[in-house]
Amino acid sequence: MNDMILLKQGEIVLKGQNRRFFEAKLVANIKRRLNPLGDFDVYTAQSTVYVEPKNDGCDMDSALEAMQMVFGVVGVTRALACEKDKDAIFEAAKKYLAEDMRTAKSFKVETKRSDKHFPMSSIEISQYIGGLLSEEFPDIKVDVHDPELVVHVEVREKAAYVHANPLPGAGGMPVGCNGSAVTLLSGGIDSPVSSYMIARRGIHLVPVHFFSFPYTSEQAKSKVLELTKILTGYCGRLTVEIVPFTHIQEEIRANCPEEYFTLLMRRFMMRISEKIAEQNGCKALVTGENLGQVASQTMEALRVTEECISLPVLRPLIGMDKADIVKIARKINTFETSILPYEDCCTVFTPRHPRTKPKLEDVLIAESVLDVDSLVEEALKGIERVRFDI
Ligand code: ATP
Ligand code: MG
Image 1 (spheres, rainbow, N blue to C red):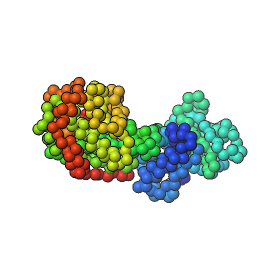
Image 2: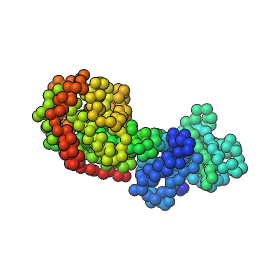
Image 3: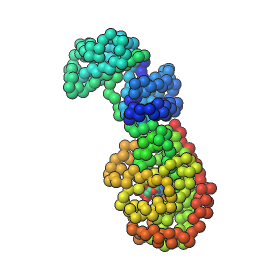
Image 4: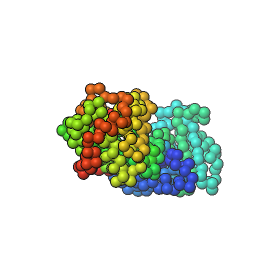
């Protein structure tokens, strides 16, 4: 069978002059994902990406699943290619969609004809194929207004295609077409979701995790690696930077007032992340912060947190309700891993009475006893990198 996959491009079709650039990124991202699944031909025409297996060794089920996770695609459909002839099209529809035609109660045929040399109009093709399908499957009714099943026929340059039941794509824009950002990835529920949301806007991510061994366990690190692996399904390629954070936390705890522990820690996270951003050509930082969720996420605390850096901090979850964040976490399959009960470095050193409305001057005084630059330098030297690829 000439089974293939058609992908409908999302908003990049609106890109005018830059469209070729976006399309090239999308095709490159698609090819990389298909690499382990067999030998495929990938090409674009008229806002559609065609994924054609070159031989029988291709894993079409896995390819269909992988294509649903590619940003920049809004619809994914398995289709059958056939000769551009009205009876060949009918035979293809009859064979390929037999099961759908037997189980659905009503259907209609919708035709797109981009090959203007084809001797029938779109409406004529729909009527012809619909008529023959009705005779072949007498239990299903024609309903042109609200059919359960829409049989799509497309007559294009190279061939005709028959398909039905499009699956939703991941939406967004192709990863890499809008630059890179560092994402601060804890083991919690929020930061995998914020990472996903920014990657979906076409951003290549560099995940950074602050690790406080032995206050947090090896399992906490494995959890972050597992979350990165899940995100790789969407992002395509991720190298997570594990930053040793223990010494910084111990210095803060030994020398600074307890009420500022979290804020001082977060300022270090920002500084180190900014350095990693510089090293990787990243133009912003991403966090899972959310207004009012905890003491360090009031407007005053956010101001103190980002005062020590100059890159913009993207906080896609800032105004969302927790329930909505959880919904996305479930959808992208990070939730179950995020709720595994391993301590995060923030929870280990949480002050009993954190400042919710900190004054910057007071925080700067609290911080002034630390040798900030050398602590940052030391942390950067100890970074461990773990690469994930698909
Ligand atoms: P999350 O569920 O993402 O952990 P949270 O609501 O628990 O978020 P915090 O622990 O205050 O909030 O962290 C706020 C943000 O700071 C996180 O969303 C994440 O972006 C970043 N962050 C916190 N801890 C770490 C860590 N150990 N490594 C990397 N980033 C972190
Ligand atoms: Mg957390």
